[in-house]
Image (tube, rainbow, N blue to C red; front, top):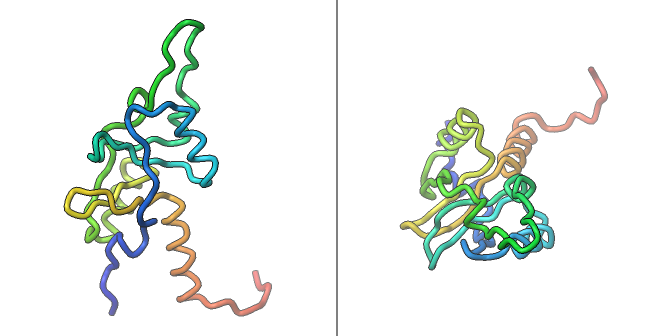
Length: 140
């Protein structure tokens, strides 16, 4: 019998992050260049939330003469944060129950990684490959 893996076994370590005062253009460029959909949001070295590509899409464009919104204006500042050692099944169940697509992973209060729905799919695919090796057939 195997033990439940901790979330650190499935997360993306050392994620990029963006400052709370950064422009939305800066965040969008970073996300596009690195092909990810979530950015942890930092304020003075402290983790304060997460910005998703959906948050960017929902952000209102400023009217002429208005100040453009910053990351802190549109990011979710009440992100789901878990320690490295949190069992993966608990994280997955919480994300499913609350319809979340990301969890920020910390070690001693500092950002260590991010776990997203993409990481969950990747982990489940690995699980299926281990327990159901390909037979090479096309049986329905």
